[in-house]
Image (cartoon, rainbow, N blue to C red; front, side, top):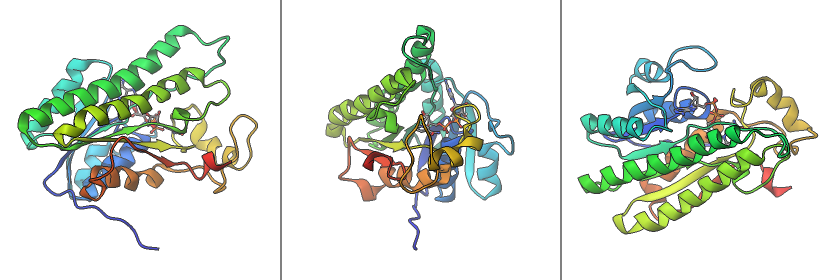
Length: 260
Ligand code: NAI
C-alpha cells in the first residue's frame, strides 16, 4: 500500500509531550516532512530511554530544538510559542501532553482529577489560545491539532477522571474551531485508541495481549494495540493544506474500537 508523506518545509511545529510516545512519533514525522520542530516537554529524555526526540530529528537531517515546558504553566507555553518566532513563528501547534488519572469513581482522589484536568484540559486550552493569539498577531493563520482519546466519547471502567478530561478536550477543540474559523485557523484532534506507550504503567508491554482480549478494556477489532507510528500521519493530515476544509473534527485512530 502507498503512504502519505507531507511537505512541511519552511513550517514550524510545536509538539507538547514530544519527548516520548505518540508525541515523539508525531514530532519525528513532522521533522521527516521538513518542518522545524520544537519539542516542548518536561524533560527531553524519552520515557523508554534512547536519543531525545530533537536530537533524533537532527540526526535524520532535520531541524529541531527542545524547550523545557510544563503545559500547566501558561508562561511556559507562552515562552515556547515566543521561541518559535526565531524560526518564523508557530504554524502548527500540537497539544499532545497528557496525564492519566486512573481509578474507580468511589476511590479516586480529587487531586488526581485536578491533575488530569490541568494537564489535559488547561494544557490544550492554553496551548490553543497562546498559539492562536500569536498566529493572529502575525497574520499567519495556521492550525492546531490536539490529542483527544477514545475516552472523549466512550466511558471505560475506572477511567472516570481521565474520561472527564478527554471529553473536555473534545469540546475545547470544537469550541476553539468555532471561534477561530473567522481567522482561518483550524482546530482538530486525533483520538487514539489503545496505543502501546508508557502512558499507563506497564501498558507498553501488556498492550498487545490486552488488545486481543481484555476484561477491562474491549477487544480491538483490528486485533492489536496501536503503536505511536500508527498515529503520526493523522496529525500531519489534519495540520496540512489537504485538510483545509476540516475543522472541529476528531479523527479516531483506534483499530475499530468504537465499531463494537
Ligand atoms: P507518554 O507517557 O508516552 O508521553 C506523554 C508525554 O507527555 C511525556 O513525554 C511526558 O513527559 C509529557 N508530559 C506529561 N505531562 C506534561 C506536562 N505537564 N507538560 C509537558 N509535557 C508533559 O504517553 P502517550 O501515550 O504518548 O500520550 C500522549 C497523549 O496521547 C496524551 O494526551 C494521552 O492522553 C493520549 N492518549 C494516549 C493513549 C494511549 O493508549 N497511549 C490513548 C488515547 C490518548
